[in-house]
Amino acid sequence: MKLIKTLLAFTPVIALAFGMTVFGWAGMADADSHGAMSHHGTMHVTKSPTCGCCGAWVALARQEGYDIAVTDTADVSTVKLDANVPGHLWACHTATIHGYVVEGHVPFEALAKLLEERPDVTGIAVPGMPGGSPGMGNDPTARYDVIAFGGDAGDGEVFYQAGL
Image: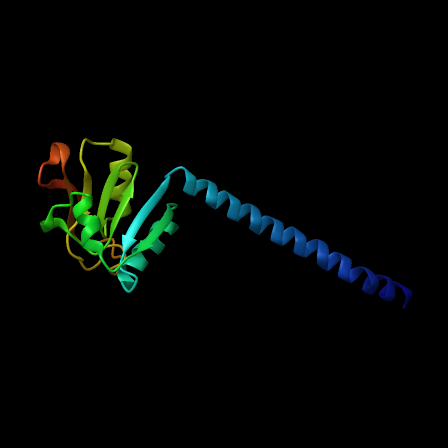
């Protein structure tokens, strides 16, 4: 009986130590994930506050390790005009990262290629809202083109082909 009382007396201490260990590991994992975000830099996304697919793309970008700053505005056209996105390439949201413009539901493989290769272009775009693109169903087999524009790309040339 004395052994049981002794064990019961130490149970809260053991539970507290176990809980601190588990929460400590979770905190370290969270710190590691924030460290992974910092290597991409901060991406600034301007979108309509009511656009669910833009919010879905932002959530996927965060899962990919991007640190995101969001500006919600009812006037997304001004941002596109200021960023020199050609009208035929417009989509629903506009982002900037490391001096590049990222228009619409660009797949993260194309974004990684842009940031790795650093071509002399203004940015890349996925015109419209193709089904299966990130935020629009996120189907890796969906086929659509990512268009580079500005600089060496002029008014637009295929930069990346999704789904191939």
